[in-house]
Amino acid sequence: FSDSTTVESTSSPRLACTGLEHLNGMTVDIVADGSVAPRDEVIDGEVTLDHAALETQVGLPFTVIIEPLPLVQHGGGRASGPPFRVISATFRVTETKSLRVNLGNGFIDAPLRHIGTYATGQPTPARTTDIKLRALGWQADALSSLWRIEQDQPMPLALLSVSLELKVNT
Image (cartoon, rainbow, N blue to C red; front, side, top):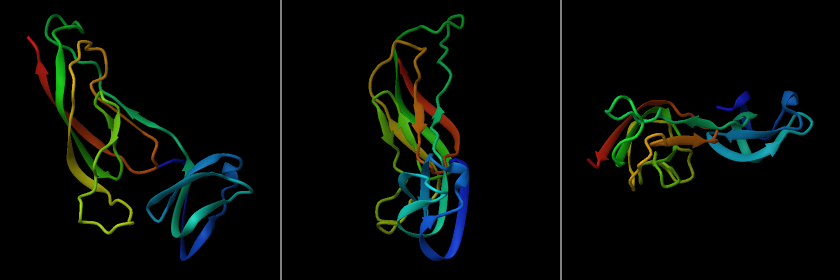
């Protein structure tokens, strides 16, 4: 879930990832045994992990950005109209481990864990679910984005759909 990713699995835990000569001098994302590890620079084709791991993924970081087209209200297709607000947004995801969303009040990490169902310290399992988030505030500019996903975590994100509940002040 990074660019130019190298995936390695070993039978015994190790503290270094090797064979990364193609990434020499670059800062990389690291996922060790399903958990995101701190970014590191590749030196002499290798990076050192902060803990021993059996499976690693190492690759170049990038940021995923997803946002909808502007809202078109009735009235000849013009992008202006009465003030409105997003009451809630439901994000349908599949096999997703991380979702960072802005509904107009800044970015939040959507809850993908159920409290009490996973062991502490274990990586977040991939989830297929609907995530409903509440929003605050009115908007008068229909050209501004109603929501935005922006994340740089090297974790899977598969967005299937977004459903909005809107309140329009007529």
